[in-house]
Image (cartoon, rainbow, N blue to C red; front, side, top):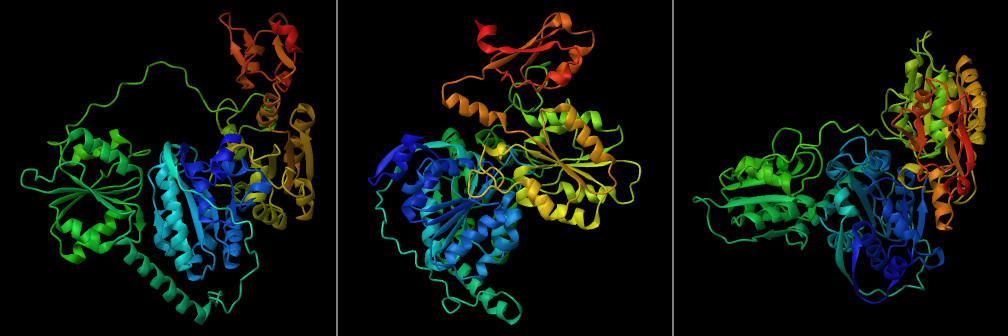
Length: 633
């Protein structure tokens, strides 16, 4: 990461091939951001990676992994109230966690300015839904920029920061997965470090207050927020981020003038379609997508006979444009994307299909792509080699009865819901499991209820549900899957990892909340863990098992950075394994196991980390640990 560090801190103007998430950090530096916060979630973690490539003493701003998105947003808000430009970033559903505070922000005078970066996820690449956060902009009176490329991400961040500082209001910068991870040669401006920045706190109730949105005070605050939004709408009419593009000629098509209205990634896809087709269709591309430049859009619709609105996910702009056309008495024919569900991001093939559905004479419908190869074996999501969660689920599976109820949560351990474990039958969001399990236990005297919670989620959103379960002594067993990191999004620290500030042990927190029955066991100690789970499930009332083992992917990466390999390797002595035990070994689910042609089990040495957690799956002793060098010599 040294080269990225040098690029981000360069005081000279330069051009470089850069990921959207990384380009964003250079934008923060140039804009003069002083406080940045986050809770990790895809597709935004690389923003934090780029920040962390800069040594702490060289960073031009304070960076913090907060305990959850709500706290991250509030820390950034507090910094802005003190006069410091701040930024917070998280994934799409992270805004749900932060929303209780986010919807109040526009009512406040943000003295330093504040940019909220959202990573929306069309296609659910790493999320449980395809939430469209454009709705939040409208609900909270917050302007929104939508870049389509890494270069636009950098430039629109600068524009968002300037707007936020000028108007003293929050601004959304909405990215999608493709925009976060795409790479482009970006032209960056020069930068002058502000070594003498004044950190004097500038918050005062007299400077932009009041800051208490209740009763009689809230009316003028809301009026002020709406006035600011109207002022931004006026700016949007001529803002450089909103463009009308005519990549081909201006001729009529069958006596009609055709147009497109779009934003973000679909704009690039449509431009590619127009470049291929050569049809003279104009494209209104919205970069500052909320508030809408209404006069400019009305003029565009008046000048076209037919207009197609193309947008990913929900039909947000379509509804607003139809209302706008109706109010203005425009006779334009407004088309929209099909009513059927269109999964994923709208790449050039998808937008071509949309165009073909509206104007089939101009865009010949294309045949569907090649059929996938048939009869390929399914590849289910699974845990990494040596993952303590796998060992924990191996024990959990033995403890569970056929009718027992299991409640999953968000994290690596969510994959326990898949084969071969099938543990976890319901899932909502981070931290829900204890509360949901409590509801499932009410009036239930016949079926045990077991909930799961990751350690990062424990601090993020899990504690209120636990307090409630302690308060009412709900008859559930909570298994906290502790691996000492925020593993699913890239091994970021959490309050229990000890990497940032004081380590806050989960056992101590549970005791402080009043939990009486708590047992902490290493996941690799199969017999002790199995006993602890059974004992906990037999307890009438609330009980907790902390199933603990460090993230082995993180351990392996640390070894690799030192040029080392795991010293041990598991081997299979097939002659010791009785008939039927092979199925149990395969059922353990480690990806390093391979079924041989003779139906025995072998080990892939490149995947095995020699942890030995699989040995309980072979009571006969057919799995034998040996030194890696001896096996591979």
